[in-house]
Image (tube, rainbow, N blue to C red):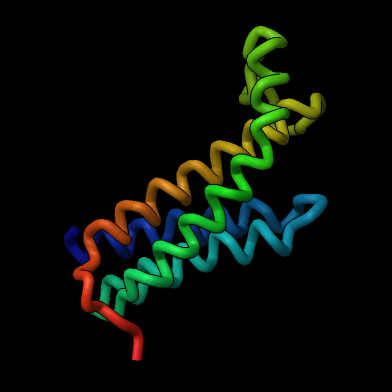
Length: 123
């Protein structure tokens, strides 16, 4: 993956972190998104560690799976829009946005892990 794409993804995940500054529980979200940004930043400069990105992907996937009851509730409600308003007026809006944010992070980390050579280690 070219360095420019990795640096673009750093910006994307920093923006995700910044969007969570006004969240009711900002700390775990900011830390999760910044961790993904840092790992992509390290990778852009040849300092990737496959173990770290892989374990973070697993941890975020487990966190994401804890939201499945809310996702199923949203599906049973007929999958109403989660983008109609910026305010999370309904509980399913917040759950779905969080779930999708984690899904994006997990996919990005899985891609980073897959593309990082097996012997790559932070030292």
